[in-house]
Length: 167
Image (cartoon, rainbow, N blue to C red; front, side, top):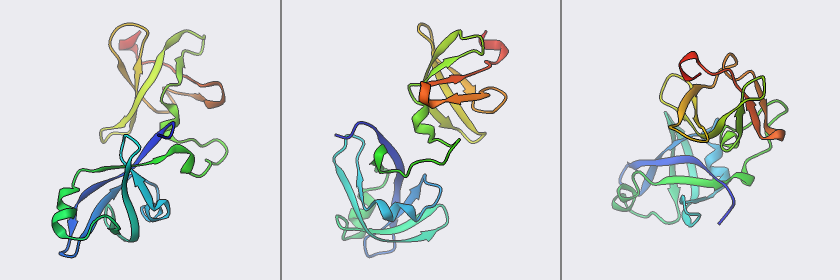
Protein backbone atom coordinates (compact mmCIF):
# COMPACT_ATOMS: atom_id res chain seq x y z
CA UNK A 1 0.00 0.00 0.00
CA UNK A 2 1.31 3.51 -0.78
CA UNK A 3 2.55 5.58 2.15
CA UNK A 4 -0.11 8.26 2.00
CA UNK A 5 -3.38 8.24 0.10
CA UNK A 6 -5.28 11.40 -0.76
CA UNK A 7 -9.04 11.35 -1.32
CA UNK A 8 -9.78 12.98 -4.67
CA UNK A 9 -13.42 12.02 -5.25
CA UNK A 10 -16.54 10.16 -4.16
CA UNK A 11 -19.05 8.29 -6.30
CA UNK A 12 -22.35 10.16 -6.04
CA UNK A 13 -24.34 7.51 -7.92
CA UNK A 14 -25.43 6.40 -11.36
CA UNK A 15 -25.91 8.71 -14.32
CA UNK A 16 -28.26 7.53 -17.03
CA UNK A 17 -28.99 3.89 -17.81
CA UNK A 18 -25.69 2.71 -19.33
CA UNK A 19 -23.47 2.37 -16.28
CA UNK A 20 -22.03 5.86 -16.15
CA UNK A 21 -21.05 7.25 -12.75
CA UNK A 22 -21.66 10.71 -11.34
CA UNK A 23 -18.53 11.50 -9.36
CA UNK A 24 -18.06 14.40 -6.98
CA UNK A 25 -14.46 15.57 -7.24
CA UNK A 26 -12.31 17.26 -4.62
CA UNK A 27 -9.67 18.45 -7.08
CA UNK A 28 -9.16 22.01 -8.32
CA UNK A 29 -9.92 20.85 -11.87
CA UNK A 30 -12.61 18.12 -11.89
CA UNK A 31 -11.31 16.78 -15.21
CA UNK A 32 -7.94 15.97 -13.65
CA UNK A 33 -9.66 12.90 -12.21
CA UNK A 34 -9.45 11.31 -15.66
CA UNK A 35 -5.69 11.85 -15.72
CA UNK A 36 -5.24 9.64 -12.64
CA UNK A 37 -7.02 6.72 -14.40
CA UNK A 38 -6.63 4.06 -11.69
CA UNK A 39 -8.30 5.16 -8.47
CA UNK A 40 -7.90 3.33 -5.18
CA UNK A 41 -9.96 2.49 -2.12
CA UNK A 42 -8.85 3.82 1.26
CA UNK A 43 -6.99 0.56 1.98
CA UNK A 44 -4.95 0.96 -1.24
CA UNK A 45 -6.77 -1.74 -3.21
CA UNK A 46 -7.99 -0.96 -6.75
CA UNK A 47 -11.38 0.77 -6.96
CA UNK A 48 -12.10 2.19 -10.41
CA UNK A 49 -10.26 2.63 -13.68
CA UNK A 50 -11.61 5.72 -15.45
CA UNK A 51 -11.91 5.22 -19.21
CA UNK A 52 -13.63 8.52 -20.07
CA UNK A 53 -15.01 11.55 -18.27
CA UNK A 54 -16.87 14.75 -19.02
CA UNK A 55 -17.49 17.72 -16.72
CA UNK A 56 -20.84 18.36 -15.04
CA UNK A 57 -21.80 20.67 -12.21
CA UNK A 58 -20.08 19.49 -9.04
CA UNK A 59 -17.77 16.97 -10.69
CA UNK A 60 -17.72 14.61 -13.65
CA UNK A 61 -19.73 11.90 -15.33
CA UNK A 62 -17.39 9.02 -16.02
CA UNK A 63 -17.16 5.55 -17.40
CA UNK A 64 -15.11 3.00 -15.51
CA UNK A 65 -13.78 -0.33 -16.70
CA UNK A 66 -15.30 -2.09 -13.67
CA UNK A 67 -18.85 -0.69 -14.09
CA UNK A 68 -21.10 -1.88 -16.92
CA UNK A 69 -24.68 -1.39 -15.70
CA UNK A 70 -26.76 1.21 -13.90
CA UNK A 71 -27.19 -1.25 -11.02
CA UNK A 72 -23.42 -1.56 -10.61
CA UNK A 73 -23.11 2.23 -10.75
CA UNK A 74 -25.79 2.63 -8.04
CA UNK A 75 -24.05 0.00 -5.89
CA UNK A 76 -20.86 2.09 -6.07
CA UNK A 77 -22.60 5.14 -4.53
CA UNK A 78 -20.56 6.49 -1.64
CA UNK A 79 -17.32 4.83 -2.77
CA UNK A 80 -14.47 7.12 -1.76
CA UNK A 81 -11.70 7.36 -4.34
CA UNK A 82 -8.03 7.91 -3.51
CA UNK A 83 -4.68 8.31 -5.23
CA UNK A 84 -1.16 8.02 -3.85
CA UNK A 85 0.15 11.39 -2.61
CA UNK A 86 3.14 11.06 -4.95
CA UNK A 87 0.77 11.03 -7.97
CA UNK A 88 -0.10 14.69 -7.35
CA UNK A 89 1.93 17.34 -9.16
CA UNK A 90 4.44 19.24 -7.08
CA UNK A 91 2.88 22.39 -5.60
CA UNK A 92 4.13 25.79 -6.69
CA UNK A 93 6.47 27.76 -4.43
CA UNK A 94 4.64 28.96 -1.30
CA UNK A 95 1.80 26.48 -2.00
CA UNK A 96 1.02 23.13 -0.41
CA UNK A 97 -1.63 20.47 -0.26
CA UNK A 98 -3.87 20.56 2.82
CA UNK A 99 -3.26 16.83 3.26
CA UNK A 100 0.44 17.60 3.79
CA UNK A 101 -0.48 19.51 6.96
CA UNK A 102 -1.65 16.36 8.72
CA UNK A 103 0.91 15.36 11.32
CA UNK A 104 2.58 18.79 11.39
CA UNK A 105 3.48 20.19 14.81
CA UNK A 106 1.48 23.27 15.82
CA UNK A 107 3.47 25.84 17.82
CA UNK A 108 2.94 29.36 19.10
CA UNK A 109 5.26 32.11 17.81
CA UNK A 110 7.18 31.68 21.11
CA UNK A 111 7.79 27.98 20.34
CA UNK A 112 5.24 26.51 22.77
CA UNK A 113 3.94 23.21 21.39
CA UNK A 114 0.14 23.18 21.07
CA UNK A 115 -0.20 19.75 19.46
CA UNK A 116 -0.26 18.16 16.01
CA UNK A 117 -2.63 18.55 13.08
CA UNK A 118 -4.94 15.53 13.27
CA UNK A 119 -7.16 16.43 10.28
CA UNK A 120 -8.18 19.24 7.97
CA UNK A 121 -11.91 19.75 7.45
CA UNK A 122 -14.20 22.22 5.72
CA UNK A 123 -17.73 22.24 7.10
CA UNK A 124 -18.75 25.09 4.81
CA UNK A 125 -17.19 28.12 6.47
CA UNK A 126 -13.57 27.54 5.45
CA UNK A 127 -10.77 25.15 6.31
CA UNK A 128 -10.35 24.09 9.93
CA UNK A 129 -7.36 22.33 11.45
CA UNK A 130 -8.13 19.75 14.10
CA UNK A 131 -5.30 20.09 16.60
CA UNK A 132 -4.57 17.16 18.92
CA UNK A 133 -2.62 18.21 22.03
CA UNK A 134 -0.38 15.75 23.90
CA UNK A 135 -3.24 15.18 26.34
CA UNK A 136 -6.88 16.11 26.37
CA UNK A 137 -9.44 16.55 23.62
CA UNK A 138 -8.65 17.91 20.19
CA UNK A 139 -9.72 21.43 19.25
CA UNK A 140 -10.40 23.33 16.03
CA UNK A 141 -8.29 26.14 14.63
CA UNK A 142 -9.56 28.18 11.68
CA UNK A 143 -6.94 27.93 8.94
CA UNK A 144 -6.59 31.64 8.23
CA UNK A 145 -3.55 33.94 8.01
CA UNK A 146 -4.59 35.52 11.31
CA UNK A 147 -4.59 32.16 13.12
CA UNK A 148 -1.79 30.46 11.18
CA UNK A 149 0.60 33.17 10.01
CA UNK A 150 3.37 30.71 9.01
CA UNK A 151 3.42 27.26 7.43
CA UNK A 152 6.88 25.67 7.58
CA UNK A 153 6.32 22.33 5.87
CA UNK A 154 10.04 21.69 5.40
CA UNK A 155 10.33 21.81 9.20
CA UNK A 156 7.06 19.92 9.70
CA UNK A 157 5.40 22.67 11.68
CA UNK A 158 2.86 25.47 11.67
CA UNK A 159 3.09 28.67 13.68
CA UNK A 160 -0.33 29.37 15.17
CA UNK A 161 -2.04 31.99 17.24
CA UNK A 162 -4.79 30.03 19.01
CA UNK A 163 -8.18 31.53 19.77
CA UNK A 164 -8.58 32.91 23.30
CA UNK A 165 -10.85 30.07 24.49
CA UNK A 166 -8.13 27.41 23.93
CA UNK A 167 -5.42 29.17 25.91
